[in-house]
Amino acid sequence: MLNPAANQLSQLKKRLTKRTVKELAESSHVQAGLEDMISRFYDSLIQACESGTVNWVDPILDTWLSAMPRDNTTESTLIPLVSTIKRVLWRVCEFDDDEQVFNTIQIVEPIFEHSIAYINRLETGSIIDQADRNLSEFKVTMKALEKSKASFVAVAAHELKTPLTLVQGYSNMLTNELLQVENEQKYEPYLRGINNGTSRLKEILDAMLDVTLIDNDLLELSYQPVWLGQLVDGLLSELEEQLQTRELDISYEAFLDPKEFFYADPERLQQIIRNVLLNAIKYTPDGGKIVIGGRKLPGFVEITVEDNGIGIAMDKQQTIFKKFNQTGDAARHSSGKVKFKGGGPGLGLVIAKGLIEAHEGTIWCESDGYDEDTCPGSIFHIMVPYRDTPPDEMSAQIFGDSVVPN
Ligand code: ADP
Figure 1 (spheres, rainbow, N blue to C red):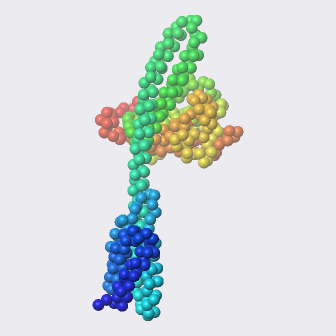
Figure 2: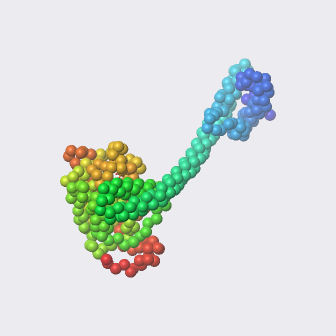
């Protein structure tokens, strides 16, 4: 025996189904297709009324939801469909006696409320799932693109280096030959030009390769004992010739015992200091002062490069460590390596950061701002973990405890 609400709905079911289908579609063809689906919903509604369990409608809602198109382009929802059924139901029921209508509303309303909440929950969940799937697909595509871009850069840079080495070799041979002939000295500036150009090109290709290695976590460090004083001295004598064109006072204030060593990749550490030092040189006017110094801290060696150059704007102090983010004028690119304000491709600090992070260290800068007139200067801090024993198996095998003070 059905309760009065379920009973009333059972009696009205045929009319309700017809009216709802009519509201939903005009074409009789579509109406025929909808009839069974709506009729089944009313069956579930009657069951829900009879049992007092709102979840009776869930299976039919699940069937509808799973039939809905779910893609990036269609924003579809079942809410209007359920609202139409509810509207039709009230309209059809109101012709019955008031008390019965009131009783039915009281029982049916929570079932519709539940249906709307249920649809909302599932639809939102499915939108989030779809967004998650889109995001994952996007990440995979981006990763593949990054990888192909990185390998393109790596292959291109590598391929360009081979002919470049040939040009460098032949131009060196030509220089040597011609310089031996007294009256051929006039060609010397041309040959020097070729040599400078090829060296610069090689540096840029090396920088591109380094960035690719860093970006793809392919950097391999070769840990060896490092005597910092020797490393900085080597760097300063390497730059000596180029620095003759600049009037700068560059000094190293040693802070470690000359015999003290720690484990790091000496070439890479020298490259980090070189990149920072070259900037200090480039952005300090003639007559300026650059000091390489630092201190020993618990677990770290802090190397500092301080200049009294043009300084760095506050808002640039983070971005200069990001790719192609140099603050200078692009028109100055490729001007001399140590020339005042001579710009580069903006990779020096990106590489320095990648290399020091590969050592598990860090780099940052401080400056009171950028001012070419007052020259507030900049100070770069390079924190290198102090490793007094070989940190990996390879270097332990090579060096063990056998390192003698140099
Ligand atoms: P670039 O190839 O332009 O030198 P870097 O990555 O080495 O690229 O440096 C990025 C930018 O940081 C430079 O273009 C410059 O604007 C700024 N910069 C770096 N070091 C200094 C410094 N010591 N003084 C002033 N500006 C600096």
